[in-house]
Length: 246
Picture 1 (cartoon, helix red, strand yellow):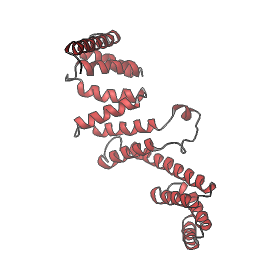
Picture 2 (cartoon, one colour; picture 1 turned 180 degrees about the vertical axis):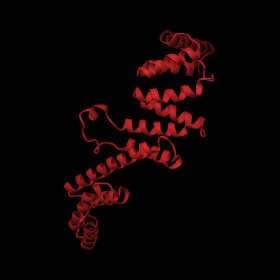
Picture 3 (tube, helix red, strand yellow; picture 1 turned 90 degrees about the vertical axis):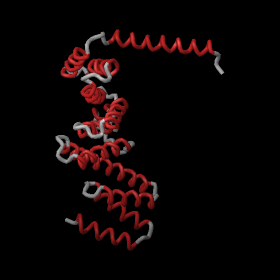
């Protein structure tokens, strides 16, 4: 158990640390009225200086949490975190906004930003620049982004962001289908035909209409043949001929 004196020392040190952090914040962002800070943030955003915008918005959020700019500051923080590739901060701010404002008129925008942020988390900037196929990488963030866009498109079909959300859903389905096909091919090469067949089946059922369906059916037929599942192979071949025969 800590003595009373020890507790007082810890409390005093905590106060000093908090004061130091506050002073440091004010050294970076001077003490100004909230509207002045907001103007500075707006100018920085207009100039695509998202780090400066973020610092000013955070200053307003910390110093004037219940002020007249609080609502717009939260929305702008989501955007600046996203543009500054601070994805974890963006998701945290988004989830906080949704929790505190479940029926807000901007929820469609917030859901859209959640999808964009998860999609950005799934994409490595360097791989984007050199155009490396990322279909064989971890797709959990793509799946999360798909859910976000789907929620937006389903709940707010008339939203300004619905059309782009749908287009991104189409793209993500293609990425997920490629990922599933890559796994199926991997197992096929390893002669793990049961696992290969399962992933082909998942692709065909879950991602109907994608370009990868044709290859998945071919690998499924060959996997069935290796497993001596002649009836299943023949049935799949008939389905393949029906859908892809020239």
